[in-house]
Image (tube, rainbow, N blue to C red):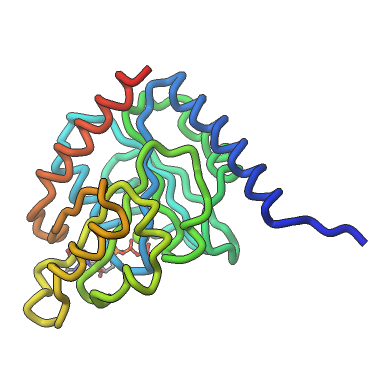
Length: 220
Ligand SMILES: Nc1nc2c(ncn2[C@@H]2O[C@H](COP(=O)(O)OP(=O)(O)OP(=O)(O)O)[C@@H](O)[C@H]2O)c(=O)[nH]1
Ligand SMILES: [Mg+2]
């Protein structure tokens, strides 16, 4: 009988993630892993962000979904180079899948590659994809207790984007509680509040991403 330890598989993932990082560095591409539960507003955030960036950076997107190509079609509609990964049941992307998608961008001059992970607050936490930044999205409709209940994904993120701010009056979501929990879990992380449909709050997020990209590319 052969037994494969999950830790060994994760080690193999880390090795592939580090190779992804080298590929990105060779082309000076800044990479973001965007995570959050199904329907929290990840794709809508990207649509708003790309409008906000308005030519300041050339983006590419990898869309991770269990099935279908709806999100990739949304990116295609914006003229953003996109590769759709269908995981066929797997609840997260891994570094091997990103390496396989990489060829899809060989002709595109990219400044930033954004990976929209499969909607999930649990499985996505354990897999390094080779990204420079991990950004976690939480919508006000999901409840303000999620940082306590799913701490790992928040702990391992560089920024929290609270979406659907326009719906606040219709919920009991306490934004100061969420800010306090994030401060305890990831004191270094930035917190943004946005209404991606109307574009509120996206200018601050776009400026922060541009400055983090510059800092990452200047780092030795
Ligand atoms: N009111 C409001 N609705 C939003 C906002 N952002 C997204 N939505 C809506 O929320 C729903 C889900 O948005 P998506 O952007 O598709 O969510 P997602 O996280 O990409 O979903 P998956 O890829 O399936 O995990 C859509 O009906 C959006 O129009 C927002 O800021 N305000
Ligand atoms: Mg989506």
